[in-house]
Image (cartoon, rainbow, N blue to C red; front, side):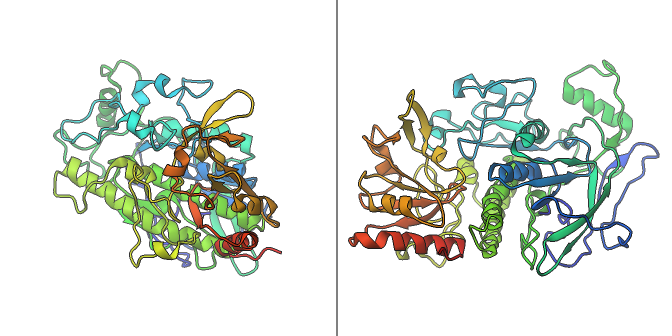
Amino acid sequence: MLDHGLSQRQSASDVDITTKVDDTIPMAGSERTIFEFGDFDHSSIPLEEERWPVIIIGSSMVGMTLGVLLGYHGVGNAPHSTALASQIHPLMDVLPKLQSQVRVLRPPPFHGHPPARSALPSAFRRDTPPAWPRPAWSHPPQESDPDRVAQVTPAVQLWLTRNMFEPLLRESAEDFGVVQQFGEAVVHYDEGPGRGAQHARRSASPGMDRGFWAPAGEGRNDFQPDSVTAADAEGYFFDAAGLNHGEIPVEVESINYWSIAGFNTERMSSKMGRVFIAGDAAHLMPPTGGMGGNTGVQDVYNLAWKLAYVLSRKASPKLLKTYDEERQPVNGFTMRQAYSRFQHRVARTQPDEPELPDIVCDIGYRYPTGAAIPARSEWSPSPPLYEDPYSPLVTAGSRLPHVDIVRCSGASQHISTLDLVKQNFVLIAVDSSNSWIRAAIRLEGLRVDAYSLNEQSTPFRDPPGKARETLKVAEGEALLVRPDGYIAWRAGKVEDDGRHAQLLKEALEAILQKRFT
């Protein structure tokens, strides 16, 4: 898994010559430091004996999220990072919870259990303005109605910077068996037939402690390279922190110049299918809308379960080809939306595309092709890449809609249909005597969690009977949902009761591209 290191080329090419520029300027001498990443003599650095099924190059927000998700699926992994700690130069990301079993993470100094929706500090609630002042040159972001958002997701949308989020990921990483390799640089990998992507590594140079971001604007159109002195940076720090100049001692160790960019990779996997890119290595976009971090998390949320299924031999390696097939078009859509927000809110020019609601970009994206089986009636030469979460299509490639249901065992507890999705495929019906449910329970070769949701069902109940309407499922029908919460197949009504088991088996074999004995 390559997270960083191929971002400048914007393609997971098998040519091992890739240029990447590091704009960090150490203050001593104030000269630009440029590193050229390419081929070199690595013969003196031995390829390591592989101890982990997955090596993650890049251990920031996206890489560490992949590590935690793989650990959740029972796959050992080792994220490598040249840094000694979290990224110090922050970027803004908005991270809505993709599924309700992924806990709401809070930044320090808040500790303890996740807060209730109403108890979240307003500074981090996306339905309230951010605590920091909005520059006069920027249009405001979209407003968010928390009551309406609660109709389509159990999650609270939060404003979080990546340097607030990464430490929380690292705290959870050990619980999932993630072996974090800080201060290590992977300098070469060898991908060949019949073997994995072996790698060699060496220790990296120390990192730094803290950083902050000073945007252009309010009299500054841009920051040209080498145009900011240490004194300038110190002044920006005091302004950003709301402190009087000289109130506390400050030492400026480095300055990083950052430019607005919008790119999307042509491919997200290597030709041999053993190396994958995600996050900034695969796509770059303006921070307007806070979509960059979200999109990287979406990448690895799609990839993690597929890697886990292939490594545990529940699926053919061909399943991994659907990672590129599903994520590359969606990333292009999201990148264009982020750029349209930049055009409208910052550049104040006519956007290239209409600005869609944030909720559409957050949870309305679709996978019309890939690891899913659309019905003949759903086929289209130009299938949509997104849908309105408030009016979901509920077809193959769509996100499973949120429905508030009740856990019956023990003390009654309200949960979401999204909580039903864990490591396995899930089959959901609305009638108790459903033949698809029986077929899923008796299926051999692969475990499928099966649930009926209605007014009398157990162990989960739908007292108002809303699942039938929201999921668009009638008696005798069912939804087959992937481990990432996306609908893989709509199982229709079949009169011949003896065919359900065979049809379900054939659908799973087509999705996972593997025959079950």
